[in-house]
Amino acid sequence: MFIDQLHRFMLHSCVQLFW
Image (tube, rainbow, N blue to C red; front, side, top):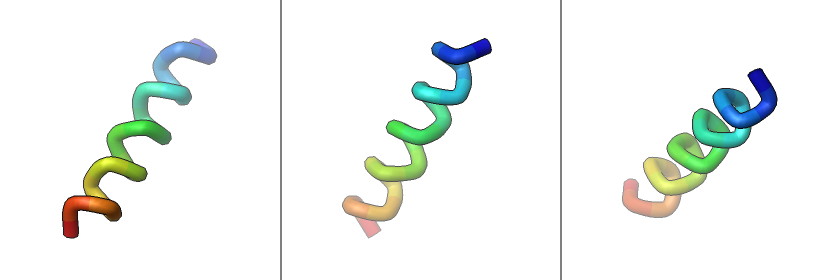
């Protein structure tokens, strides 16, 4: 699903930013 991909991308960005 497109939303799933977007969510995954956002999560990855958040993690990268957090780390």
